[in-house]
Image (tube, rainbow, N blue to C red; front, side, top):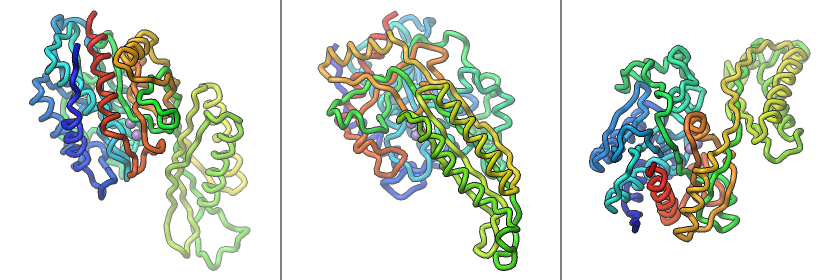
Length: 413
Ligand code: GLV
Ligand code: MN
Ligand code: MN
């Protein structure tokens, strides 16, 4: 089948979505359910309508745009990603996989292809953890690993509930209906930017992901005692910031201590109060991200961080509350789907690298309910989660071509 990917249309979609942002270009900030996210969703819905896809949205706002196959009762084959973007992020993370899936379906339709299984684009709600402290909300809920009651307990940093956010964004369907029926999908393939340097370094246009690293996150809320910066003597202080600073260093040491380059740990959030130059900080809140491709080693680092928290806080007479926000196992991609993608690359003449994903994706969760794999395209300088994240439009087009051919192959039962 001769497939023509409309790279210009991809560029138009990427530009239109980058304009839905609360940041100055080239930065993109698009927090889930905020005005920019709702504008981006409206754009996508319109494109799905124009492409002739049948759209539904679940109670969280995850969007499903389906091209019914010749045998619509068979489990479908799906592709998609997210549109939400963390503060001062770039325009490609997630978005490439959404517009890429859309263009893959458009190209297959233009080519006169008739899928046997239905093909579907999925726009996952809230892959980024920014608003609610937990990433991949849409996919976790779809596979039933987040229950409606757990969803109802989620709050943003100001205490506003996910339920309030989603209903005021217009997503009012019952949360009880978000979990998918078993066997809903025959396969899932996500196209994504690599967010790392390997493809560029190797000079290869396509990565085929065979496994996704295991992410975890902790929130540690420390409470000491405030007081006058002039009159409280050093030995009498219970400074929460200093306990937090020690913990951030302990996090780094725990990751380095495994001796493996595959262990990474980050204190990405560190807030203190009361926030006056002449008052001793009495509260410190840290959010800590830990990842590894080896689950046992990742969990060992989590234990080391918990032990450090206990020891530091005891020594500094600071109390703390530690919550494990998530601790997910790694995912192994499905060998048959990986093989399908490799065969497509070989057939259309695109050299590829078989690799692991150190970033997490909704695929981490989709892999628990159906055969799943991912296609990566190069990220300039390996940069991501930054405004200067960049991927070349032609290379995005090549990723879309691999995706479209793969979806076509998978859709034939
Ligand atoms: C996804 O955004 C991740 O943090 O890996
Ligand atoms: Mn991201
Ligand atoms: Mn992403």
